[in-house]
View 1 (cartoon, rainbow, N blue to C red):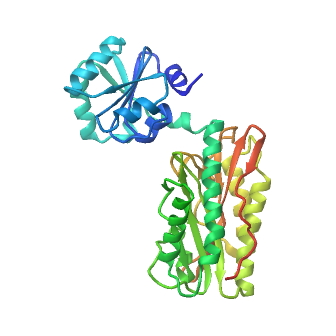
View 2: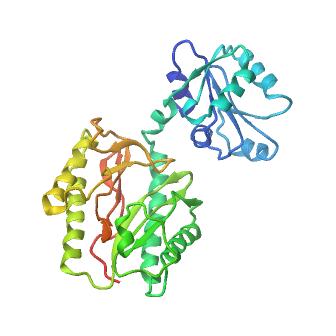
View 3: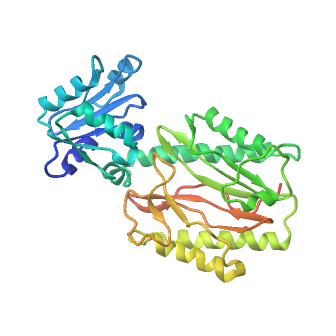
Amino acid sequence: MNRTQKLVELLPEGTQGILVTNGRNQRYLTGFPFDDGFVLVTKGKSYLLTDSRYIEAAQAQARPEYTVMQMKGTRSDMFRTLCEENGVKALLFEDTWMSYAQYESMKKTFGEVSLVPAGKLLEDMREFKEDDEIESIIAAQRIAEKAFDHILGYITPDVTECDVALELEFYMRHLGASGTSFDTIAVSGSASSLPHGVPRNVKLEKGFFTMDYGALYNGYCSDMTRTVVIGHADEEIKKLYNTVLSAQNAAEEALAEGVTGAALDKIARDIIDGSGYQGCFGHSLGHGVGMYIHEAPGVSGGNDKPMQRGHVITIEPGIYIAGKYGCRIEDMAVFGKNGPEVITRCPKNLIEL
């Protein structure tokens, strides 16, 4: 059963279709990346609707269950005709991705067809990755790992945080990434205490240097963090780093189908708090990853749902001492056909540069 058939089976009683307007959800269903058009899935037929800029590519790349159509004339006439042909009287729409103004416009477009909020119907589908999705995520992660190997030889006392961020991004594109999963974080010295600090146009400061970044490949994200030391690591730095590493290793050793995000978070947090850093680990242990960098399931104290096959998550404990420095180490793990596996292959030993 393909994704579109699964979606049709999930349509609530009394509805006959769904209009998909979010670009990544459109790609998830059709296999075609585009950002100007619509996907209409009904219990009868399914359609990819776009304009002349994308029509040829869409016809070549879209999955066979989709009828590719070029939008002509008025949208109202087109949509009302398709709904009438497929017996659609109540249509789901992606309310979580739509402004109020867009909703009001849509009501006029569809006329007598009732519009019903879809909520997180597609996001709930995407939470559980299929094997080909996991393969794309692993491929994205391998690109990021090669970029880390490269950057270790690139860093010198004369480069800036911005230099490192840009080099990571350039090298990942060189290796085949279509972009980055998110804005690259590369912060050193006192700025490393900022979990989501912005790279500065300053030379790397002594002490911790945190690099958090990911590659986008085939529509899927990777996510990893490595913290190195610029200069010599004193005993205090070593203690902090090894505490973060111990917390991460313990959480990763506890990975199993059925474990909850809350349980994993507690394992890591107890180690950090018990080592004298209580209050210095402010964010959750991790999050799901897929077509978006942050997806379900949450790996946090608030998530009591069990991890299951198809989940892809991060494990990323950190310690941050305001105004001084901080450290985070992040791996990715997948719950695949052979059970949970940490897929990140970069070394985690303390590196001094």
